[in-house]
Length: 341
Image (spheres, rainbow, N blue to C red):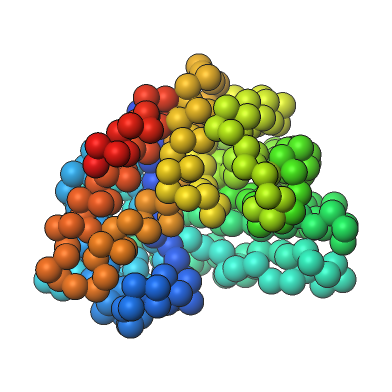
């Protein structure tokens, strides 16, 4: 079992390939569709995702796996082919988001705890049968220094839940993506993000060891070290890279299967530039790639706008973003390449 988990994890961070996070909840994708004037129905969500999964150039060349939502992993394409089979046909690995979302942590205003452990063993067995070979669980760590957020209790509770989830995944033959996201929404500076991220990752790996999780069969999906959006400061890609790698060298075991960054509200180009700067200062003990949702999808969503006539244009927009992030995962991206498109 362990060898197979290790092989799946290695394939997820194959050279220059990364993950498409297409696991938006029905509520989140409705917000995205509202922006492009598309009604969110089971069919429109299916049509949109089918368009992405059938984007041959992007999927076969640059995407190693796709994180799906519960609805999507059960859906069939317009021609009756299961969406999971369309993904597999491109050589990408189907994955599944299994957490039930972040809820307020009782007794700790401003802190959240991610729920979804109840019944997870049974759900994982079902997802395995549907073709999922990796899963994702997101913990949300907000920063509000004035209110004492995050608390040590919040960090500890979320790290413990991530470890329990990871152990259950591996028991089911599924590679766990552990995602402890330190949000970039606050007014904090880059140094505060670094400190909170350090406390979070330190606790996470303590819990993963305690849960006897096989590290080679795990993928870390972390935030980059960035100043909060409300701070008014934008860190250069070089500073982001330096602080992010310093953080990982202090907290992340070399044994893990790889690292796939979340974009966390960065613009498309910003997420690419920062990933590129991180890889450009290598070599590193781990593969470092992307697991982007909005930073891969915003351009194709806009191009598509719910019209079948726009499918080719939307797929071209997806291929461009995926190509840019492919280059960034190799440390070979240049800003001029964005203009060339």
